Structures are given as C-alpha cells and as structure tokens.
Amino acid sequence: MIPIIVLVTGVFRKAVRESYRRIRVAIARINAYLQEHLTGMIVLQLFNREARSFQEFETINRAHMEAYKASILAYGLFYPAVELLGMIAMAIILYLGGGMALRGLVTVGTAIAFIQYSQRFFRPIQDLSDKYNLLQAAMASSERIFKLLDTRVTIADPGPLSVVRDVGAHRDAPLPTSLVEFRHVGFAYKDDHRVLENVSFSIEAGETVAVVGHTGAGKTTLTNLLLRFYDVQEGQVLFDGLDICDLRLCDLRKNFGIVLQDPFLFSGTIASNIRLGSEWITDRQVHEAARQVGLLEFIESLPGGFQEPVKERGATLSVGQKQLLSFARALAHNPRILILDEATSSVDPETEHLLREGLRHLVENRTSLVIAHRLSTIQNASKIVVMHKGHVREVGTHQELLQKRGIYFKLYQLQYKDQEVPVRGS
Image (cartoon, rainbow, N blue to C red; front, side, top):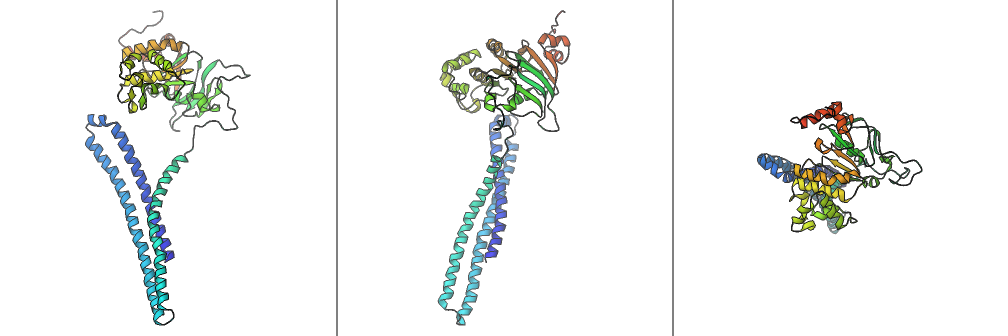
C-alpha cells in the first residue's frame, strides 16, 4: 500500500497547493478592493456606483469561495483515500492471514497481531493527512511572503567598495559652484516611453529655481530622480559636486524638505505630524514653523491645540489645512533645499497669498526648487526652467522668458488672457 499512498499524497499535494495559491491571491484582491472602495466611498455614492461595486465584489468573493471549495474537495478526498487504503490493507491481511491460519501455517494470534499492527501503521498516516493539509496552506502563504522578501532592491546604498563621502565634508578638491546639477539626464519609467531626454541645468546655492511646463512634461520626475527614488538611465545627477549614486540615501535625503501636491498625514497629533519622528525639533520650532505658514491661529483655535488628535490621513482637516501642515513639517526640519511640488494647488488665493508672504524671507536664504502650474507663484524666482515633452526648452527669469515669446509666454497668456501681458520696454 505504501507506493499507492505516496502516489495519492503527491496528487493531493499538487491539487491542494494550487488551490491555496488561488486562495491567497483571492484574499489579497478582496483586501485591496475593500480598502480602495471604503476609502473612496463618497465618490462611489456620488456617482451611484454602489450596485456595480457590489457586483464586482461578489465576483471577487466568489473566486475566493471557489478556490476554498477546491481545497476542501482535495482534503475531503485525501483523508478517505488514506482510510480506504488502510481498510484494503486490513482486508488483504484478513484474506491471506486467515487462509494461512486455516492451513496451520500461522497461528490465529499472529494473524490478529498483524491486523493490529496494520491499524497502528495507518492511524498516524490518517492523522498526518490532517496536518499535511495545514502544511500546504502554510507553504502557499510562505511562497507569497518569500516572493516579496526576495524582491531585488533597485535603489540601494553604495556597496562596501564604493567611496562614500558625506555631503559638506572637507575635501581637497575645490567646492563646486552648483549645489545641484542635472547633466545630460535621460530617463524612462518604461523602456518604450522616454520621460526625460538630455536634460541639463543647475541650481546654485541660495537660488530659487522654478520648473514649469504642461502636464506630463517631466517636472515631478526631476524631484524623483534628485531624491533618488529612481536611478537615471543616462547622464548624472550631482549634489554638491558628487554623483548621488555615490551617497548613502540617508545622507542625501536629509538635506531636502519636500511638500507634495497630495499631502499625507499620519494618525497622531498636530505636533507629531510636524515633527514626523524628529525628536530634536523643539516645541518652539514647531510653533515657529506653524506661524510662518499662517497656521498658528487655526491650531490655537482647536480644543487641543498642537496636541489635537489627527485621524487617519487627516480626515478631519481640509485639503488646504493638510497642505499647510506639510509646509510646516518641511520648514521645521530646516532643510538645505526646499522642494515644492505643486504645493499651493490646494489652497485658496487668500491662504496662498499668506503662505507666499510667510515663505518669502525663508526662500531668500535657502536653495529652493519650485514646481508649479500657477505662474504667479514663481515670477520672483531666480531662474525658471521651462520643460516641454521631456526636454528643457527655455531657461531664464520671468521677464527674460516673456521677452522670448516662446512656450513660457504662451503659458502666461493662457493664465492671464484677460490681462495685458507686461513686456519690458513696451
């Protein structure tokens, strides 16, 4: 019976492993679907998508049910199969042992002993079939875990053979004139679609550089490359004269403070979201950062002040208030370079005006990279880089670019079509 048991076990293992793989995939899809649709419940209700979403969930949930039924069927067949083989083995012993006992070749006691031995042999196998079912479930789950753990890290610190130099450390070589430099950078998220092509420009220390252009021109990609969320395929990105690939990620990113277009807040308090785990930031610095972005009056009006609880993703705050908190967070960390990625797109004009007034004196002594669609926010920039379809098309100040009457001039006309475009000398 042992070869047959091995064969049955192999068939069961293959069937139940596949079914448990399907179960884990189905559970992951259910969790992802629930998280997405619970978060976007308001949008679903506004567009009357409840019935459609229920049908989609029912389809995903049914796939999970079918996979679970397949595992139950495999186990429901395996356990009786082992028990059946045990009964067959006992029948064979009764047939052969009984015949030998009648012919006097063995005693009746010997035949009964073999029957008991057979029962003791197959009982652990039957018990093992139950444990084997749990083992296959664990193996299917561990496959997904180890697949994630074995994912190669594409953005990593330099290896032990690389020369890692701290930013700002003493060097024998002369200091570079540019704090940040993009040198002939080419990049593509996918090989068949180039996002940046031969992009070159520099950011001097203490300079405010603005990047403008149409949607999809590659503006946000510049910040992703500068912070090394992706590595360039062509060219170099230099920081303080060093290739960012030769710097540890923590040494590079600690020099930047960034405010994104879509602010993200964590569960906790107002103060903890401004500090973001940096315990060296004092209460005074937290208050000063909130004051500089025009948020102090609002925070003091809350019952808990800076200790007011913040729910998941800042659900109790408006989009503008969350963005102002992101500003305060960046300023409290006092970075060498401040990056604003469409940071004023979610605030009203009055708040935007207060925010510009609060940031103006900070930007004067701090290197800043501003990505904006609203040209009113970057007219006083030291340098404006105009991007179009992944290329740098124009570089200059606000007045210089208006004089060229190129892409920037057209963008300015689109935003201020009801006003006369000021041109120097006219």
